[in-house]
Amino acid sequence: MEVKKVIFVAIIITLLLIINGLFRSILDIWHKQDLLTQTQKKLELEKQINQKFKAQLSLVRSKEFVEEEARNKLFMGMPGEQPVIIPQNLLKQKENKKPVDLRPNWKKWLDLFIKN
Image 1 (tube, rainbow, N blue to C red):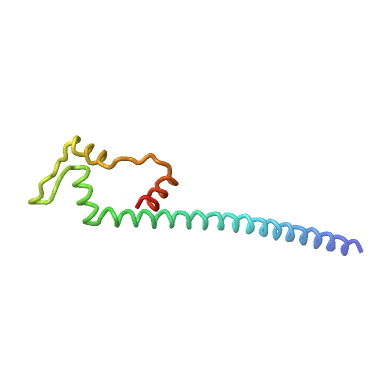
Image 2: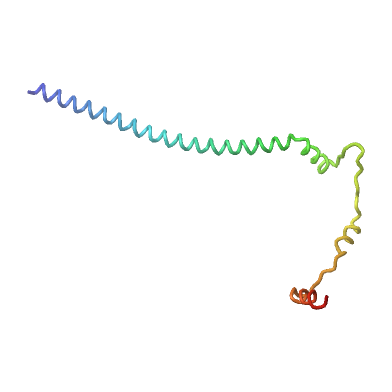
């Protein structure tokens, strides 16, 4: 009878160790799954950033962008082109050319329909 008790206790201890190992494995898998989902989110974010950089790179490599940067930042031009410099006084004259009407809107409408 004592041998049966020892075998029974040994089986119980073995089963408890197996259950403990399975429980730890399940917890480990859950943690790894959480880590995997976080890593996938980071990957998606990095892919979006990569796409933006690729679009920006294709824009920068275009001939139009290079010409625009050469004109605006390096003050270069195409062969045969001459820069046109407009004096500041001409720019001010053009801006101040149109007088500003300070009458209220209702008076403008009234003048438009009644006096014309």
